Amino acid sequence: MAKLVQEEKKEIERLASLFPQKLTVTVTRSEDGGFVAQLIDFPRCYTQGDHFTELMANINDAIYTYFEIPEEYRVHMPEYSASMQIAEFCGLLPKVKSKTDLTLESFREAVNS
Image (tube, rainbow, N blue to C red):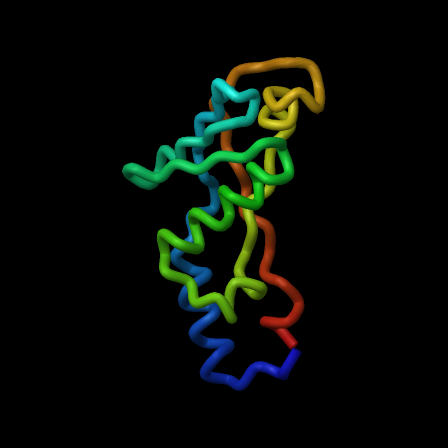
């Protein structure tokens, strides 16, 4: 991966500043056994995944798409990670409610180097 120039670092920081610290989602089971997530903070923003890992990747992809993050910058963007409540709902732990918050991870090292 090529080293980022100062202008790219600034643009990455600007784009990342658009992300809210917490993202509220509602996760429900789909008819085929997967999961559907509605991103409450963003009107008409839905995604799905057949399993937990795919759902989390698709939630992050939905946010990148919403903010029109260029493909080459996505690797440097923050990512939302699931709370224990989402993991519980998706069957990884005992079951709980379907609505919870995702928290924002810190920037990747490449932005700060």
